[in-house]
Image 1 (cartoon, rainbow, N blue to C red):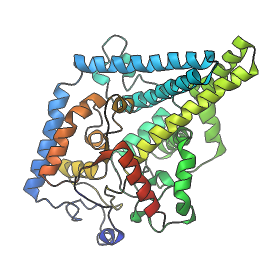
Image 2: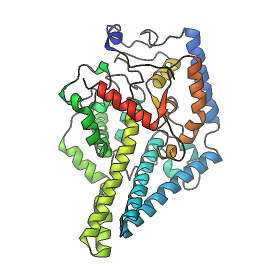
Image 3: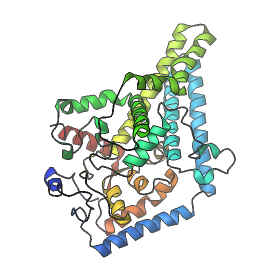
Image 4: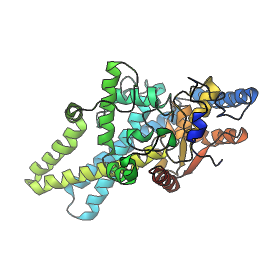
Length: 388
C-alpha cells in the first residue's frame, strides 16, 4: 500500500481560484492521458466481467444464507433474552440480537444500491429489490438515506463542501475543513459518546436529508436545519422503536406478569443496539477517515470515468476481514470496491478485491487498506491529530 496522507491546505489553495477543475488539472493524478485511460479501462473491465456473472446461483445462495442468518439471529436471540434466567443465555441473546440489527443495515445498504435487483424474480427474494425494499427494522428514512448516501456521498466522496459524510457534520477529519473549533478539541470524547447511539443520530440525519430533498433537491451546506419535529417523526414513523422499546418488553412483562422481566428485555434491546452502533459506527468512520486517504477541495470535479475511479479509490479505505465477520458488514468493509461498483453485493466485492488492488499497484494509484483493529487505530490517530 502506498503511504499517502490527506491533502494539505496549501495544496488546495493553489487551485482555489478555479471552479470545477478536474483531478488532472489540479495535479492530483500523476498519470499521463494514455496511462489514465488504460487504468480506467482495466477497472471497467473488472466491472463488466463480474456483472456478467451477477444474479447467478451462487448469488442466490449468498442472499438466502444472509436472510436465513438474519432471521435465525433475531428468533434465537429474542427467545434467549425473553426466557433467560441467568447471565450466560442473556448475554448470548444480546449478541445474537445485535447481529440481527447489523444484518438489517447490511440489507438496507445493499438494497438501497440495487445489489440484489438481479434476483428479484427468484421466489421469496423480490422484497430485496430496490423499489420493493422497506427498512422496517431500521431507525431511519430510507428515502433520505438514498438521497444523502447515493446522490451526495457516492458522487462527491471526500470533496469538502459537497460530501455530507466528511466528518458527518460534527468532526474535523481534514485540514480542508478549516481551523478546529472548540468542540473539535473534544471530538474523540464526542465520538465515544455518540457511537452507542449511532443509528439514532443516523436516523435523524436521514430525515433531515429527506426534508432537504423535498425543499430543493440539492445539498446546500453542511449545517442543515434541525428541529424537534424530526425526532417526533423518527420515533413515530419507524416500527423499530415500537417493537424494541414497547412491544417486546410489554410481551415479556405480560407473559411473566413481571415489570422486572419487561425491564430486562428493554435493557437487552438497548444493549444490542449499542453493540450495533459501536460495530457499524466504527466501520462508517474507518471507510473514509483513517488519515490514509485523500480529501479534495470543493471545486473538484472528475473530467471522465477514469478520474472518477481515481477519486473513489483514493478517498476510500478497505478493511480486510475474514469470514464470517466480513459477511456481517455486507460490503461496507471493502469501501474501495464498493465505491467504484456500488451496485455489487458483498460476495462479488470480495471476489474482485485482489484484482482491484493489483491494478492500483500497477498504475501507482493509492490503495488504502488495513485490518479492522489497525483501521480503528488509524482512525483514532487521525481524529486526535485533527482535533488541534
